[in-house]
Image (cartoon, rainbow, N blue to C red; front, side):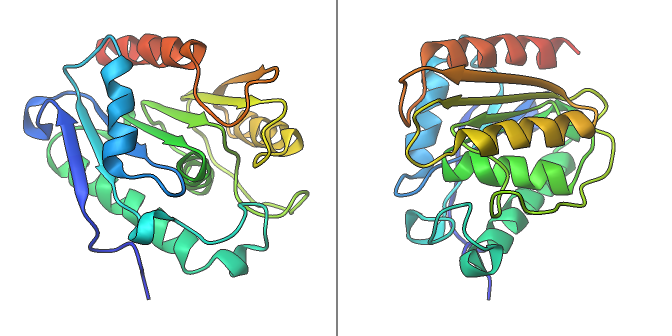
Length: 212
């Protein structure tokens, strides 16, 4: 059973076959591809391909991302499989993985980080807006590999009701151990949202990936 297979995928920006860079954008709980794609309107760089998959019933997994992983199955595995398929599709259009950025908000941020931790390699970048790796706090992980200094951004509030600060910091340590170039930013009092500083980081990342 794979609930998210066969769901819609939405596109914005440049067509994949005409672009040298792609961004996979993973929406949060209760949101839609159109919702997360609207974030791209704030980016200074528009001439890349933006790709956003749809979760079944607008939710990637039912419970908190720090619940036991089995409680959130098959949603987590199905969501990770969607990312895998999109990467393959984009590769087939001629865009290599080191030119692909994974970006997510909330549940989408958690899935993006979890996919990258399980599949460490050189990406264009990983941008996690209010999220962390998936699983109970303090869970033993076996992540090994080399992300070859892939830029990884983890931004979150210090008072996010959904994302414990401990997990944000734990996620940072995991990606540092995988040889990623990690930027962790904790925003006092922000809550569960996206801010201009994060958009500015994304703008710089897009310029960097386009020029690499």
